[in-house]
Amino acid sequence: QVQVTDAGGGLVQPGGSLRLSCTASGGTSSFHAMGWFRQAPGKEREFVAAIRWSGGSAGTPYYADAVRGRFSISRDKADSTAYLQMNSLQSEDTAVYSCAIGRPITSTIRTERGYFSWGQGTQVTVSS
Image (cartoon, one colour):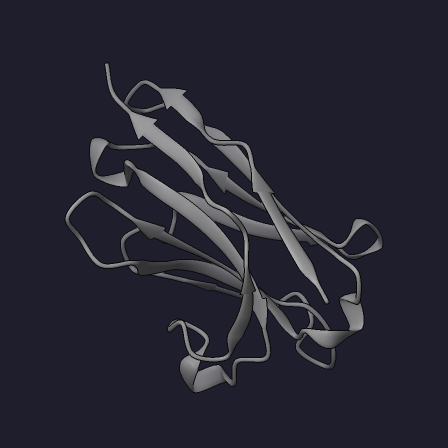
């Protein structure tokens, strides 16, 4: 069974940067995309970014409107790892960030549907 490990969270001041990592192990041929979602206190989990892992669209990124232009997702296929570079962080970005892998189709890649394995989550706190 594929396991997902996410890491890299922490405390950062407004305007700062963090890089999260997401590593899949135990069967990396079973998924077609890696995605990042976040959940702030009292709010529902929401999509942040995703990247196609294999096939003709491998490497294609997808972003939520709230992070486009500030966040960047990339992948290192050899290491089965995706990275979420987060720049110009704002207090509204404070949340638990969780990575997921799965086989979502394009119309659902920004939803939780199609993702079947999740990391434990990493806390990102943006505060002065």
